[in-house]
Amino acid sequence: MSSGYLNYTDGQLCLGPSKIPLARWTENYFKPVYIYDRAIVRERVRKMQKALPGVKMYYAMKANSNLEILKCLREEGCGADLVSGGEALRAMEAGFSAEQMIYSGVGKTKREIREALVANIAQINVESLPELLRIAEIAKTLGKLAKVSLRLNPDVDIQTHKYIATGLKDNKFGMELSLLPELIQVFKKFPKELELQGISLHLGSMMKELSGFQEALKKLIPVYQELKKEFVSVRCFDFGGGLGIVYENQDLEGEEKLLQQYAEIALGTLKGLGAELQCEPGRWLVAHSGVLLTEVQYLKKTSHKNFVVVDTGMHHLLRPALYSAFHKIWALKDSSAKIKADIVGPICESADFLGHDRELASVKDGDFLVIADAGAYGFSMMNTYNLQEPPLEVVV
Ligand SMILES: *Cc1c(COP(=O)(O)O)cnc(C)c1O
Image (cartoon, rainbow, N blue to C red):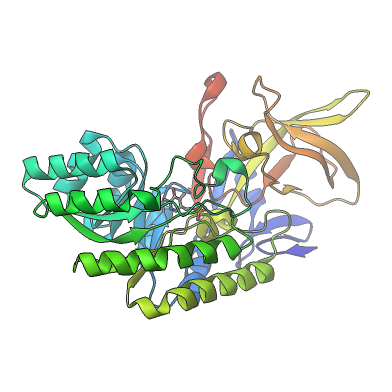
């Protein structure tokens, strides 16, 4: 059976174009381990760069902030899109210069803004009027010119899980278009403190139907043009991240078709603007590059169900518990005997599951399972609830 970057070779599950046998990490195994393949990250970045020529990519590092993965993305020519002071430090550690960073997020503290301005971060994506005023005040005391873009909320639906939609009027993200006159007044009041570089949007994650994306771009074009008339410094249009992948069964061809459509919409819709185009992809670049290897602890049978209890769970991979997200689960060793079971973790919560009613090659305690497509929003969302230990990470 073949599906994308994970395949059985001689009954052993292997990852990536060079077919790395994942069984390698079962020797000396002592706790769950995230395994990432750099070759997959490089392949994904190159595919996206090829589809979006001339667009500057700022990798949304909250998807996976592993230092080696960040270095790999930097080497491939990406900048970094960050959402906290902690991420700024990590990006610097990975060798990104402040010139290559965009700073997003609704809750930037005074300290975070001060440090971003001192470092001369290339662009702050502002998410509210009070944030813009706060940036202006801090820039004034520092004697700095803050380079900002306005993150606008176009109020469109991208048909994704409600926890990962960010471009609807009910969401905390971005600013309503009706706020523009007030924002313009702030820029006029602080010409030595604020430079308006452009506008940005990010509609949410796991977009697989792109009409909402196109509608949002169309809504924001006249806004960009109006701001450009008002301020000569306006030159950037940041169309965000959020392109979805297929978790059910790595459908790389389908994903490439979607990427093509995405690129046609972005480049086609924005072409007449003469703007510097920017984007902020996260998941699309790294999700397929990583897996989570876990050891089976118990097969637990009830009169209702089979449970495979493993040594990882919602503390290491939160997405199933948080969004009912689907991750494909493989037995490390293939077998013709199958079982059907819920794959669950050790945490004292019924939300602690990795998959429900999954059919997979039969396993017993001491065998291993592999959770697929865990390279995005896996380790980066990890927590230590129940005082569980963090998993390991290896990059190959
Ligand atoms: C999370 C995030 C992204 C990346 O989203 P993906 O779905 O991982 O591509 C981009 N921009 C902002 C502002 C974000 O918060």
